[in-house]
Length: 156
Length: 176
Image 1 (cartoon, each protein chain N blue to C red):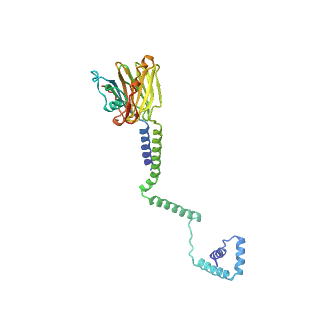
Image 2: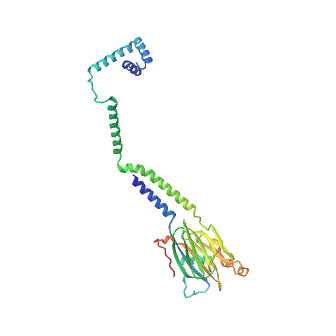
Image 3: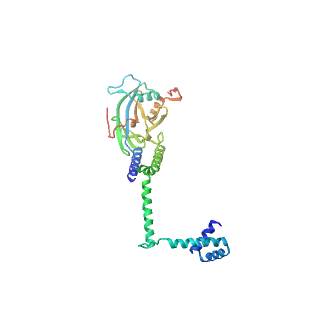
C-alpha cells in the first residue's frame, strides 16, 4: 500500500514538474523586407508561414531571410541570440510559455517586454532601413517541434 | 403476564434485583397467584438444574479464563477481516480516493498555470530615443512591434504608415 502511494505521489509530482517547469524551445528569424525582386547573396526565402503573416500586415512585396537561430532555454535562464553584428535578442525563460525578451541594437537595449509565446503566435520586431526597406526579427516558440532537451544554437 | 414481568420474577428468584425492588417483587408475588405460580415453577427448574448440572472446575481464575476467550475472539475477527477482501479490492479502497484527489490537484494546477498566462504582453519598455508601436493581429496570431526614432526628421518617414490594418474582415486599408 505504501509503495502504491509512493508511486502515485511520484507520478503526480513528476507531472506537476513537467507542467510548470522545463526548457523552452524558440526560433528567431532575421528578415529583410524590400520591394526589390531579388535579395542579397546571403538571402533566402523566408519561412512560408511567417512570410504569409508579414504579407498580410505589412506593405513590402518581398521578404528575405538573412539568419535564423534556434535555442532551448532552461527555466529561469537567459540566452542571447546574435542575429547580426548589429542586433542581438536576449531571452529569459520565465516558465509557463512566458519569456522576458530584449531587442539589443548596436549594444544598447532598444525594447524590452514580457510576452507569452504559445505556438503558433509570432512576435515580430521591425524597423526602417535604407532605401525604403525594413528589417524584422520574428520570434516564436518551437515547443510543438520539441524533440530533445539539449541546448542547441544553430546559425545559417 | 407480560414477558417483562416474567423476566423480573426470574431475576428476583436469582437474587439479581436491588433490595428495594426485590422487596416490592416479593410483596407482589405474595399477593398475585399467577406470579406466585410462575415463581414456584421457576424455582423448581432452578433446583433441578443445580442438582443435575455437571460441575466444571477451572484450573485458572474466572477472569483469566474469560480474557483468553476474549483474546481468541479478537484474533479470529482480525484474521477474518483481512481474509475477507482480496488484495486488489483492499488496494482499490485506498487508491480510488487518492486517485480522485490527485486528479483534482492536477486540474487545479493546470487552472493556475493557465490563469497565469495571459495572451498578450504584460510589461514593455522602450529604450531612450526610441518609440515602439505595437500591433496585435489575433487572427494571424502575430504581434508586431515597430521601432522608430523619436527625432522629428524620422517621424515623417514613420513606418507605421507602411502598416496596414484590417478594418473589417476581408477589408485591408493602407494607411499610406
